[in-house]
Image (cartoon, rainbow over all chains, first blue to last red; front, top):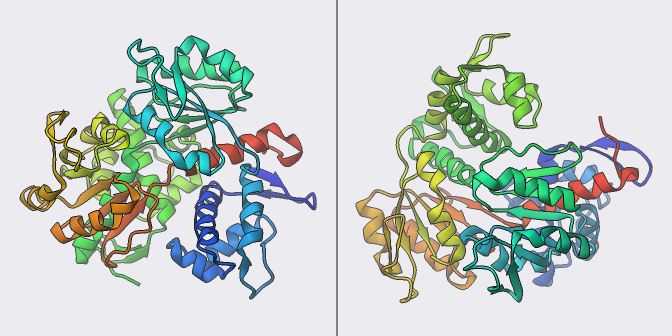
Length: 224
Length: 224
């Protein structure tokens, strides 16, 4: 994705960098809560199991955040990253599909703490409609457009059955959603200006499997 | 992570590549199920929203899988990737913590289909113990070691409360688990030969937020 910095210069920011920004912010907030004021790129990178050069390279896209050889000021870096990521103001989101996964997402307190208040939950199961999760009532799917428009929602997670994933996504987009967090295995067909993030749960197990296999078979691996 | 290929040559495989392997496999299995026999790097890359050069670069670590200019043979590439990822044989896993998220993971049928049969679920809540999910009874945490050893389990997901995350992880590792899929926000302190994958749910929303913000503010973005 190409972005323009404050000096008007254009950069192409790799997706891998974008994916690491929240991890940096996550860790920095923990450090801030622990009272840590300064952190070096080496310390921060080590705690995330990446190389310091990689971290500095990522930060460089956004101006670098510190003078060469100087540590980062945690209290300055946190709001700077929040602004870059777009969570300097609360970003409301909704969850469509209130099965186990949907309810798990709704119950995840960290979203709120990290700037994403949950403002709507939708499902078509009459047994679920009306139940409150974290103070929010599960509403029928037909209410989506009203809630999205009223609360100016831009982000939605979908955890519905595969069969209705596409129509659910279209409904959300028509109502004004611009980013979809897709927990279904379906490849959504949506306009190009809609951002879709496909969350494939099995990916996590596969990465673990790849790495543990190589640790258990020394003939396949040689450590640094 | 450094790995050795079949010719005895050592490569350092970037983590980003390792994370993409399951996505390739995922997509290729879908193509295979749809009856597709051949796919070019361009087609496969496009369907995953990455560059063809990136995909070829990733595959190059493992021998490339096709002659230059030739498409990939889907029926050959699927088992090759399965072997590399380590899912050519079923890899049993357990889930510790049977709250919403734990139950969502247990109910996720795709794990089984992708080579990860669930063989144990553990929780300490007396209201949950004994309940069956996908045919597996929720057992008390104290049974972990017995099940792990009996079923030769190497991978475990933990979705327990933060306060007991560290002790749960230690219990799993002591019993023989080598890879931990950590859904708690806790930084686990474990021996170096244990692979931990921290799943930070909010990361997904943050990436979406970053990208939709830039799409909605044209002054911050210029498309290719």
